[in-house]
Image 1 (cartoon, rainbow, N blue to C red):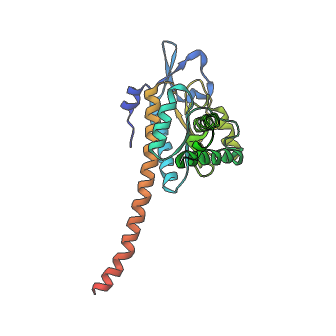
Image 2 (image 1 turned 90 degrees about the vertical axis):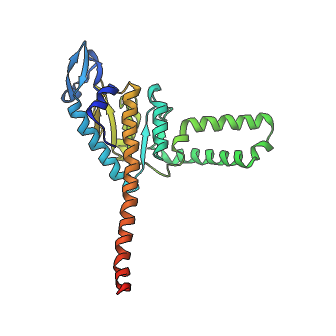
Image 3 (image 1 turned 90 degrees about the horizontal axis):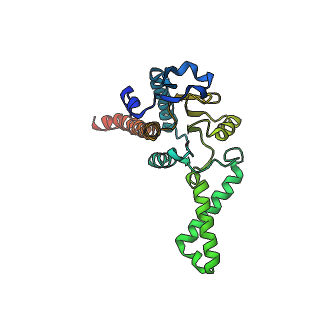
Length: 248
């Protein structure tokens, strides 16, 4: 999927925060201001977003894991929906400290969630008393909300895509410690520090958030499709000479 300047304008990507809240580190991405609101320079944003999608495509083609992160109210449903569409892991409720840096412990919680889900499926939860079964069901709901989006991730991600880097500073700190590249939407009030692929733009509008998340999900799907197409092409090229030799 390619994104156009018009789509960005329609989604309000260019609207930053009030000028008094600006972060000087974002100066190079700001076009100017209107009614005390900073305007993001979309001529900078568009190629940077395309670069982020290109990187994501390549990563997905090489079986890389991309984790979507967006826990603020406007982003939660969109992040979950687009990540699920692309078959990616996501965090959309709350970033738990140590989610990456203490992944060993997180894996134990994931195993617990999988065990509970298996008990639900085979009906073994019903063997417990009403009160005990209710307690387990509540724990399942709690685990599902906090780690349900990463239960099938299978290991640490190779990159993290973040909506609102200021809101998700914990994720950025952990990614930096582990050397995991961050693709991040950075509004005019935040710092681009620690973000490998900066996408300067509005991080509050649900339309803008949808545009970023959809673009990233499409990039993942395209990368995987390209990898499959390459495998098919290689297989065809290998069989063709053999077929020609047989025909002769």
